[in-house]
Amino acid sequence: MTATDELAKPNAATHGFKRRVVIGVMLAVVGIGSIFYQPAFDVLVYVIAVGALWELHKLDERKGSPLHWPVALAAVSGYVLLAAFGKLPHYERDLIGLTILASFIYGLLRAGSGYLLRTAVTVIAVLYIGKLITYYIVLRNMVPDGLALTVYAVVLVAVTDTASMLVGIRLGRHRLTPISPRKTVEGAAGGFVVAIAVGVLAGIQTPLGFAPWQAALISAVTSLAAILGDLVESALKRDARVKDAGSAIGSHGGVLDRFDSYLFSGIAYYWMLHLLRGPFAR
Image (cartoon, rainbow, N blue to C red):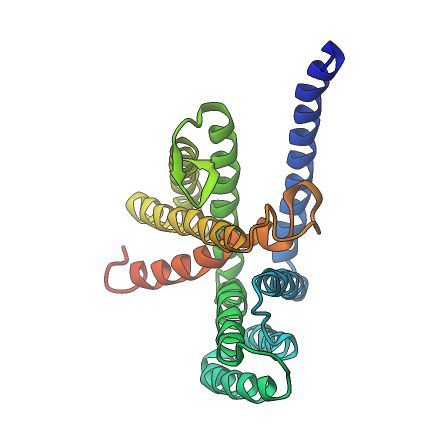
């Protein structure tokens, strides 16, 4: 290897990092901007859901147990539509029941082994993608402060992801889990601490008006859920023996790679709000 090749390696790494940051900033601007216009946000959530579902389908396909794509797509679409029109609490049980029934019936029309496994994978995929991602639509529909609550949630997850990456690159020494060799204890801790700091500073402001301890607790649970969501997706990729779930977002990998942290954090954030706005509210 020549000296030129040696110099090119850090330059390429720096260029790749800068490109990743630029794409990340652009995604953040589009994502947060769409929250201010609810129909646009609903559409964006749907696009993310379909993209993530397709990538999960391809991962399962690599493992020999592809989900029933038409059934999963229809069910995830149903989740987003019901959430967008505020009807999810009334019809979710029916949607899940129909999804299970349709999965069993559709499996009868397909040749090959693994009938029960493919049916189970389909239902799990619908819940993992469809149910979890629609918590953000439910948050956005909250009256009167759904806009502020949703922006706050998205910022908490984005800060966790970004700080974890930056701290991990700089200080990461100890592997967080065997599932993902690139995730470090230092990176996760950095993302967690920075998310709490940002969450407290933002949460005590109007219109949110949380008490400092409320903002700290909400931020901590949401950040931990974001880290867990990232690790779960890493486990899915490791199981399928791939580096990225897709390539739709360039250096960020696929849709599932980019938005995995939001899946678990949405439900965690939602239930923390209900807990702290109930008998323990200020």
